[in-house]
Length: 69
Image 1 (cartoon, helix red, strand yellow):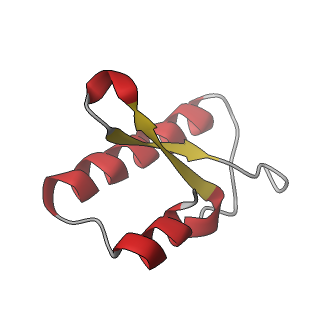
Image 2: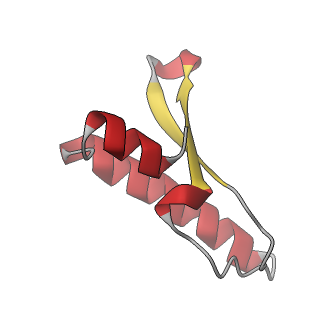
């Protein structure tokens, strides 16, 4: 499910969960930049979310759609 679809279905993520989600997304972007990759189209529809079964259902963002990278 995309971050856009998630917010449409469940509303905005709040509090500590949004801070952790944003931190994970920014760490992913930093990881890309350290390897010379610039995404150029970060938006809610290009971030997929999955639940991490190992950490009690924590939302894990996955950066998608590198067509413009």
